[in-house]
Image (cartoon, rainbow, N blue to C red; front, side, top):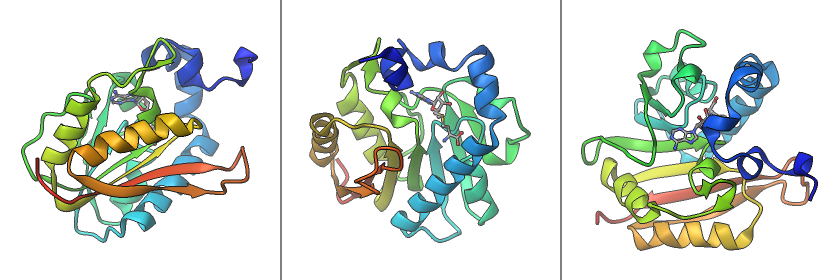
Length: 204
Ligand SMILES: C[S@@+](CC[C@H](N)C(=O)[O-])C[C@H]1O[C@@H](n2cnc3c(N)ncnc32)[C@H](O)[C@@H]1O
């Protein structure tokens, strides 16, 4: 495959390597990225059925494009982002940004009503471009722990491999969640969007 046709997470060894310099600036200053992130966030909101007031954790919040529309609708947000440079582009202190790795969550039990993630999750299971579900059991366990019972998690992710999607799904099902994938525009390669919807059905 021509490397130009590869997605950033398969053609770069890590998210840190990809989002730096001009790439980071052009992402954080792009009106179309802002719009796309907002659109997907509103779809996530619809799928989750969330109504304010509620506490939402936004994993991989980037510059805040996904958190802002939630905040504007009356939700309380805690955002987590690996790259601190993403967090200093805009005045987003009301979104309670935390610089940290979503694979190492340090919140108390049963805290969040909802956990969302927009266009970030696919970075977490790749190492040097290859698929690796490292620490995934721990990740699913900690998501289960910090979410309230019957709380909902919705992740939008860029992943075209059905076998990878199945593996991810089965990890969550083993760790107290029940749910499904929702595919929007499945026929269109360009417009297709994948959402993983999970409800916490038991504490583990
Ligand atoms: C395409 S951006 C989308 C960000 C965000 N939804 C927005 O509205 O701007 C994906 C983000 O996920 C972050 N990310 C990737 N892996 C992460 C991890 N393990 N922990 C926290 N953030 C991560 C990246 O640094 C990047 O800022």
